[in-house]
Image: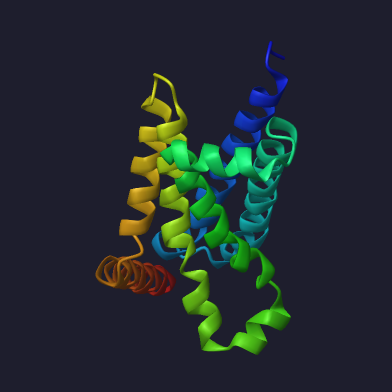
Amino acid sequence: MTANPIQYLTQRTGYAAIILLALSLTCTPVSVVSGWKRVLALRRPLGLYGFLYVALHMLIFVALDFGLNISLILQEVAEKRYILVGTTAFLLLLPLAITSTNGWKRRLGRSWKRLHRLVYLAVPLAVVHYAWAQKSDIRQPLLLGIFVALLLILRLPALRRRFETQRAQRSMSNRQVARDLEV
């Protein structure tokens, strides 16, 4: 472990959270590029496990580190921008976790999808939180930031259509080759 177990737990839960959230964002681009639809079923569990670790991260911060002392917590949030950004990411993810069930999806209709697009803001904010929280070496948060940016770029409609078109053309070409081999 370490000389500061609370700091260790805070860092470990935060790291697990951001990795799981990034993995949840990975599912759609993987599906679009590869055509593998089964990966889409992983989005919700990865996102919810990511939120679980975010909640643990916050709980350790407010309960263990600050003993639920609201005035100390607010002072810390006001003094340290990385805590403000992390809290913002948490507050953006909270309604997503609450409304992640099929029942909420039905109740909210089209609004559900719009609401869940907040993840595209929350995860980059979490990466900024991670980078700003580092005392010195920010290579890992930068790499993670580049990865998340790439995932978000791959979601742009023009790129998505291009990948889908290329995949359809490859599929048609493969079917044609198979027909030619049968003859």
